[in-house]
Image (tube, rainbow, N blue to C red; front, top):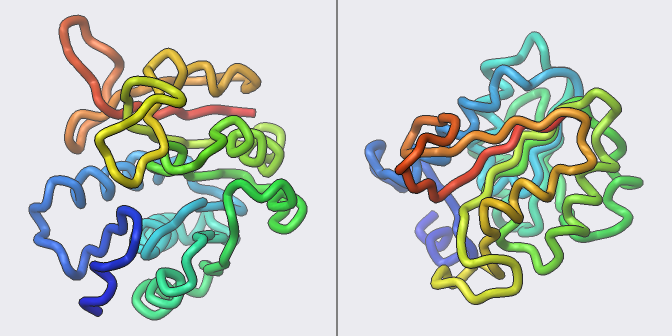
Length: 206
């Protein structure tokens, strides 16, 4: 299990972290935030170690038909399937930028994408895939840290770039309804004057 700490990327492994770890609490809070939107067929793209998919599957087992949890790392998925197995979850390997992903996976009533878009080289292709995988009337819940902007260097070693708040909001122009929230620790709120926010959360209806 210790080898998991050496994985590339930013893997959250709750069983190896203190319950009070700030990063862990922030990640768990995103799944709690998304729980009311879970229904029907659900996709968790870049699911990581599977703790979040398992959490929402347990909480919304009556509303959930199937949850497809996708990640691009085989070892991560093996761990997820072992530690966070659930009868309604299917862990599956996939590349978020694969143009054939919508054809492979089909469409979903709800899509979750937390702290993923800053890791991909083409965020617009990523959004295109998500849009095509969402059923009409379906809901996308997506978060991202803010930074200097598309194509600009970031101090985070595993981030390709971090969008500005304006670039983040522009990702969702195709959706019929969009609500933007900002995360502060484990809470989510609408913007308040004089408060600097580091993470955005969008709830988008197709």
